[in-house]
Amino acid sequence: MKIIIMTLFPEMIEQSISHSIIGRAIKKQLLEITAINIRDFANNKHKKVDDYPFGGGVGMLIMAPPVKDCYNHILSSSLTANPPVIYMTPQGKVWNQAMAQEFSKEKEIILLCGHYEGIDQRVIDEIVTHEVSIGDYILTGGELAALVVIDSISRLVEGVLGKQESFQDESFSHGLLEYPQYTKPRVYNGVEVPEILLSGHHKNIAEYNRQKAIEVTRKKRPELLKSYL
Ligand code: 6GU
Image (cartoon, rainbow, N blue to C red):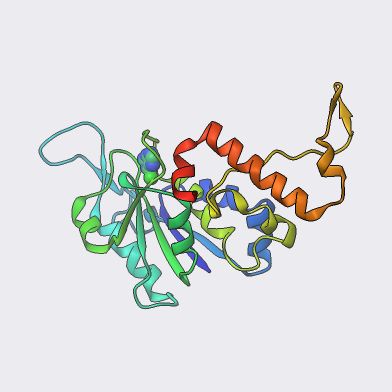
């Protein structure tokens, strides 16, 4: 899968994707993640990409032309005709696991990150196909939100998670939170590991863990149980 990020801060993206599971998937060429600097498409020698909003107001807006030129540049080496363009904004639909699953089926997606007070509405109207928020709070820019979206999509791409990691994938995909897990030592601070987990009875253990998952979900996120039961 190919993910292209349009941003004024490509280093923020690059630094975060080079590690751990995502970094490994890029090395294995399961993922191609490229951050493109909108500033490279500034049409003036001062590399200025923002200006004051007409009608007044605080802050600056990213101008339409460098965003459009950046987008055209991306399309010129695109794998697909009309890849989704996701604008990261607090006005967007709140990101969830089902959305991550949908987008993980795409060959290629483009993420657009705003900064300052935002982006000229005309280029948003022209190129954006989806608007996404990661929750009801305000970030200084779309980059951190884009990283959340990139991580949650990437781990669903075939081959990105190892066998063991996929096995632990459970929480939100079957709608329950994780059951509690234990490792050595068998007794810690006088507290023993639940005996059934030592029994070797795989069927009983699976049923025990399922009950525990329901219990944890009921206690911590009761609203999730409604869609599970
Ligand atoms: Cl996508 N962008 C910004 N700037 N703030 C946010 C957000 C996105 N999602 C939640 N807060």
